[in-house]
Image 1: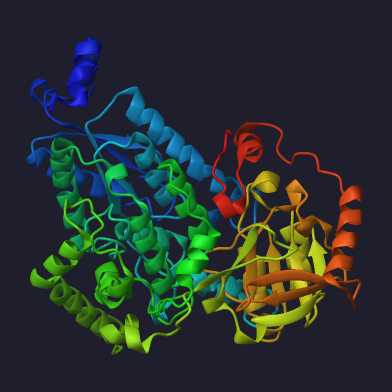
Image 2: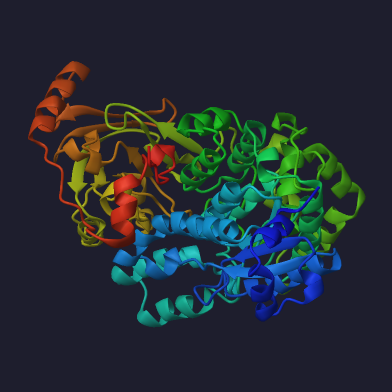
Length: 581
């Protein structure tokens, strides 16, 4: 099989001298050429260390007889932009990363690829870019950061900040938390979106078995990067492309793992967008169907007790898959060239779990605790929950759906009728929550925060202010057409579709309307007007009248990336990818 890079050399005589000028040697030109894409940069801890993984992969590529070319498109950090308009650029950045990878790989074709990222948009952006190039490729995930003193992790900062605003702790305690929550490189140490998407890449079969969400400072991670580099050259010679691996079976495997780990709700944006790149369709209904009856096993923050580094110590994705293997498609092909079932068997035989136990023993000594593997990943028949971790709610308030992570929601809020308190921005809503202008029994709305309105930012600070309040966290709901951080907990419902900017019902809600939430019944409805119960027909008539008076808002962003994103973004329940149809 003639490599595409060699065909390119024949067509473009300038290619060889330009690469020689970049530092290639003449003998490198005829080797399999591998693009190494990473989000390396000084942007945040999840990307700041990826240069070391790039070099490890490059060494593996060289030893396998290939040449690795380094390309970079760094990502932004949601945590660094929280509470500012910077967070509006977050979801759009996923599309731009995928765009740049598409440009890099198609402007100068390569024979294979190694893709590296750690965090919220870098991970799905690279997975989407990998799909667009569809050359033999492998994913290397950047791992998770260590926990701080007292097992402090970053998702607790929202709680510390809210407590400071309420006068419950002093500034010294808040500063202590700020200075100790991120003690190393890697993704934030909880099962947020970054960790979830690292796990999804392995669950789909695109990363080496056992490689997802390792401690970022572990020598094992460098070894995985090296092995991935070697494997990328083999893949190029074998001609196995990502589209050969990503199928409905592999996507369903990923969703079943998502249920078992209580993964981030943002995965309902990213997996559909990745599937779309392969011409496949998964929806909120796909997640809801597979989550129903699924066993939730992982006792890791934010819904559980332990920092994310403990995930690897307990056996990582393979250990999760062993517990739920009866519901997985074990014949799904993976980047190893073997099936998922074959990979799991090899790990049992090559000492993988014994190595993980060694790391767990060392962590117990380091933190002066005693945690067993079963404390972290529960046995299937001792599950934390048996109905997955998310639910998609539908009704006259969300005809296309809305998402709740019910494993992080108080049981008291699973079925409730609440009074609507709509706000047209997060800033106004957060101010009302912090100054006790929101009452028990309210359904608090933040609207005009969907992808077409403002880029679909996270409502993290508001959700934390509510969930950290002992009374409000168990007596009100927060509903938005925006999204939530993977660290968010409490009675929060996001992705409400159609969004307000499209004139969805969420735009028509008025003060005092009665809102019914039924998590088990999968319903989200307006059931009353101005505090008075109405029949569905009466509610429909009122909404129709309000719709006649509703007027679209002028665009918040009139130029640049967010103008382009808002013009083309698909519905949140479809993945909010840029749709040009």
